[in-house]
Length: 413
Image (cartoon, rainbow, N blue to C red; front, side, top):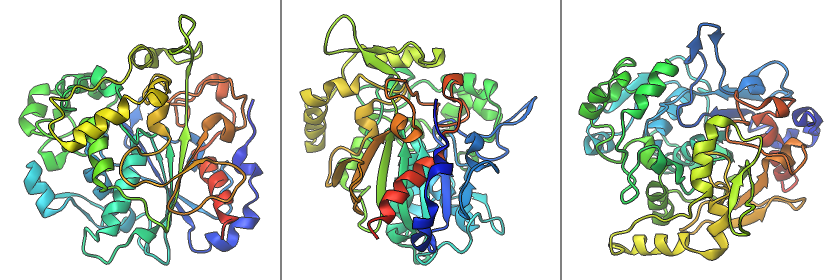
């Protein structure tokens, strides 16, 4: 059904451009894991499956697989990602840590950096799946701010590729325990299920939590991680994403290419022209959240639009032209949230085509287009990674998404 896109890319035309950018960092999403962080009785499980094995034609590129907190906030995940790449101790920042009530220091990667020479002269490409795309954007913001006082800049990142990322949040988080009025997470008991099903490194020591503590809701509550906004559940809510998009915190940078890869496992509804329904091959464990988003419009409660940002958010998500796109989804993220950030001063380049992309602008394309499959086939949230469906099991790899986009970007150089 699909061709091996990584093998079919003409890497020769990219070599001049990639002389500086020879590293690609893969960043996992919510409840994801890094190398060796999820070990089942059958052995270690790779989140990215074949993206980092010998079958992937990277033509000399070094593919780096990071492991960050599966439920930690975007800020904390970005700090952990930076420490892993550079090879240093994780520093969440004195002010940030004091504000949210956790320890300043986290895992120490000294001497184990994935790219210790990372700098403006040796930049990287960031490829993030799901929340990993948001983490990549947050990392670039912290680099631009020189958050760690090490002379970092935004041009340490050549491109950001987001695979089914909730750039504007997802209504699915309200189904799983976030409050519709505030975006705050209220059901830590949900994590009890995941911690027992998927034993792994939760990287929550800065909250005073061990890996076994996550199985106990009372310990999660007493840690304070869900008492405020410094967690991934809130950061994936529409409130959390709109707060940073509208504030301008996550600016786009003129030295960087931006691409979103959009997935969908829904079809037009049969009962009406302005609704959606899960497609026949949508995975069973995505069906509840898929139906939840198909059957309801985005209706976030606001208390008298208490701030100007609340009012703008309300206006944005009631737009008729976006309404149906908040129903069509990949099982976890609506397509309206996957394409590009809404709000603020983001420059939208539109759908990726044969035209040369420009730096500092957001482009988007469909996963089925990049994978070379029939456009009417569905592609759900897990098809980018280890959980891909048997129907689409041939050779799609996250590195191929990067390859296609970067190949187009190189033509602009």
